[in-house]
Length: 385
Image (tube, rainbow, N blue to C red; front, side, top):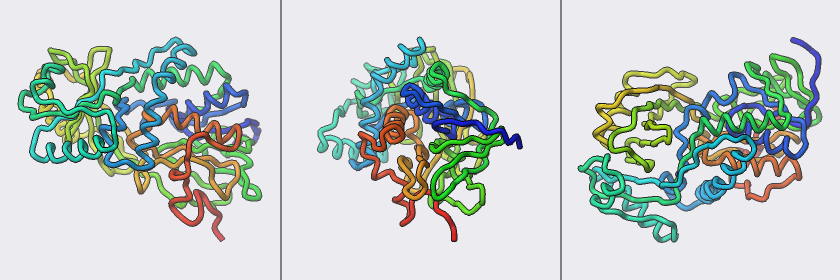
């Protein structure tokens, strides 16, 4: 290994949306920042996602996580505007809303449950009959029974957003080390001292772990550090299809799948949820299930061409909540990982809260429920005896 050291104010492990957004915030504040990425920038979960900003559509109950994702969604209009002003890249933040269809008895039960608790919570949700739904989206199946409309569940083009965030960070002096693996953390007296990588060593007192599904692979230089929590990769396969006629405008959910219309004239259909380790293969079974559910939602898609297929790995923790905040035993180690299905939605909020932690020692957003301390009496990484 090349032993020439490089000095930075902060090292971010992981070059997806989360890592790049944090790097942008910290570099704007004047810090010298490096992003270490094992692959190419933004080409893992950030590139593979559907770009849905759907806190109400996906929520099961009102809890701390629900409050977090709702707060994250409220940041998006300003975030999209700021990013466009900084880079000239329109990330296509769209506000048509989301429709959640009832196609079966089981769907009706699920939608009624969501309707009841979200109505009781005073949230902006509407119940539409089939006639009204088809007036909004004539391409949808006439077999639908009714739907819930979530006017504040929006979408963004995550690939454009990834391109914009990398550009914004580079413009502010962030260094990107691609095809570079962070092999271990250097820890001295329970404090971060640096990072060993396959490129060269980094000297820093601040490390932000934003490596998504690869977060649990990080070790210490003496191999005595292990994580008390794990981040598991969950494969999701996706398909891009030609836009049907008439065109779709809303994000459309069913209990079996979803459709995301893009302004560039195609539809993303997804997705599978598979525990297969780090395997990103695209399978006939996975594609068949996605297409079946997509055509159930919008029958005209059956005659449309397939433009692209891909798969990504969602980073899932044991309780499905992200890990955000300081390690309480290793000073200078900060977590921003495990976002699972909400990495796109929580990018602006995570960038703000984590950069605040680094810059001033506290966040304006309550991160206590998402601390690594929730997994064990020790927090995050701990030293073995």
